[in-house]
Length: 225
Ligand code: ADE
Image 1 (cartoon, rainbow, N blue to C red):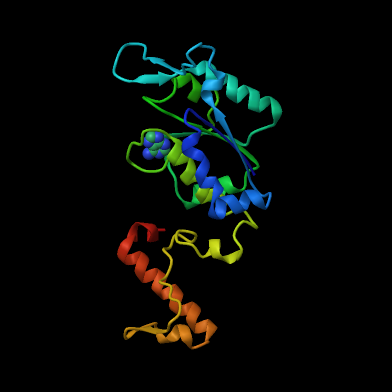
Image 2 (cartoon, rainbow, N blue to C red):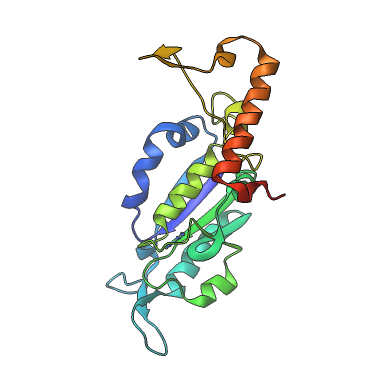
């Protein structure tokens, strides 16, 4: 998968791709990430990318021209499956959306700032708008990183053990069951006996029951279907 990220603060984005799973996905050649500084596409001597809103009102708006130039340049090179705008009024990111995006080959992520982008950018270029939750961030960059992390770990071959993403919370509209590791007893606190029994079918049943109970208690909304 190739991910092109358009931003006014590329420095905010780089380090998460230099560690852990995201770094490994790049090292394995499964993911390519390219950062595009929107200021490089500004026609203005001051590298301005925002301006006052028409009609008045507080807050600046990101201009269409630099965004158009950047997206058009990228689209000349290859076809994109999605051009995603990170915005608090987008559809809220969930595991289903992450699964869908993980199947795509080329995507662009546009990070908004200030009051957002000129509506014509959304009308003309954007194919999907995603929010990472009902709160307002200073920009779309942290949202883009969260989306990348959620998506990249689902790409086949990125995680060492292929099944580990499949058993994540939310994959079956269920939260994950509790997990334990050695020692089997610590300060008198014991691991549930079933897990050390070696009885795989029973362990599976126990995990399903635990996942169900946990979901019922914490997120009954997930069970409504
Ligand atoms: N930009 C600002 N707030 C955001 C949010 N909640 N999700 C995605 N992008 C954003």
